[in-house]
Structure formats: structure tokens, C-alpha cells
Length: 146
Image (cartoon, rainbow, N blue to C red; front, side, top):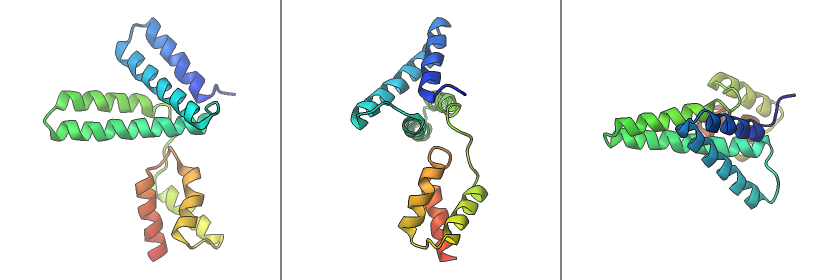
């Protein structure tokens, strides 16, 4: 069995420290700190789902920051944010494409679920960390309208 995600992050942080990779060390220690904060908020030890939630949020923040840096003419900072996003993305499960999500939506609807909230409620736990929530919302609306 593979090590839980949090242990993998900690192990990679230790390796980055030994290799004196400052950028990776800062990124991983910051991410682990965010995970610890979420553990405190949740009042429990982080499982892979909680870690994926933190990683997904951090990834989105990096991508948004890169877009802002690029629109502000700060290409070097945008590239730094994108590099960090790439590192974080390696810890997330393999992504889903829109067709796979459409198939999941169709399966949920085949069970007789037709309300937007109910479909999203069943879909999100399945795709969290593997597909963008806003895009999933759009696909569900598209399926319910069509």
C-alpha cells in the first residue's frame, strides 16, 4: 500500500531539505503548514481527502496568482507561481476529462436524481481534486437543460 499523501509530502520535504532545494522546501513546508491548520480546524488528523482539499485550494491560488502576475506584466513571478502549481499538481490524483464527468452526471441522473443541488451533491465527492468544480457545475447545468 502506498503511503498516505501527508506522509509523502513530509518525506519529499525532508528530501528537499537534504538537497538544499530552497524553493521546493518552502513550498512543501507551507503546504504542510496549511494541512496542519486544517487539521486543527477539523479537530482530527488529516486523511487523504483533507490533504487533497488543501492541495486543490493551493493549486487554484497559484494559478490565479499566475494569471494576475501575467496581466500585471510580471512574467517571472507568473512563471514561479506556475512552477509551484506544477509541483503541487504531482500530488493530486489523475485528473478527469469533461467526457468522464459527463458520464458520471449521466449515471447520477439515471438513478432518478434531477435536481441541480442533488446531482452536484453526489458528483462533487467523486471528482474533488480531480476536476474543476465550476466546470462541473456548468456541465451539470448543461445536462439538466438539454
